[in-house]
Length: 185
Image (tube, helix red, strand yellow):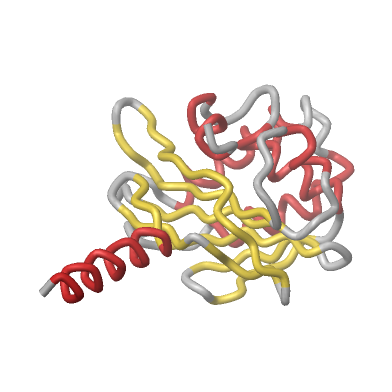
């Protein structure tokens, strides 16, 4: 009986190590960026007007708490956005992303505008609760945008990646407590 209880506890502990509850969803502890395994650095919930919009997870090759180092790094990384609200439409996502780029770049979006346009086109389609967007950066390739596991677009350039991840990690993030949670705080 003791062995059975020990096995049951070990199984429960293994399951909890493999996933993290964030808001109303479960995010995996790892993701891949090409051949590179990434681990969940931190996760949190984006909320607006007391409503949860999406759960987000930041995946890195190793744990890191320095937002500027993460944004500047030319290393594989990913951000998962798991949509939780039916109130988030494609148009609202486009508007929020555009505003995020403005803040992240201090209004200097012109050099990366073609890449921003590619990303925004991926958000224009219908967005529903439980849609999952993975923004995966691969050095030398750029940011690949997946919706529900299907590649939607790719946008080249390290400067674009910096601006994109800056939406959540810059000095003017989309939500300060979400930034802290993504940094593992």
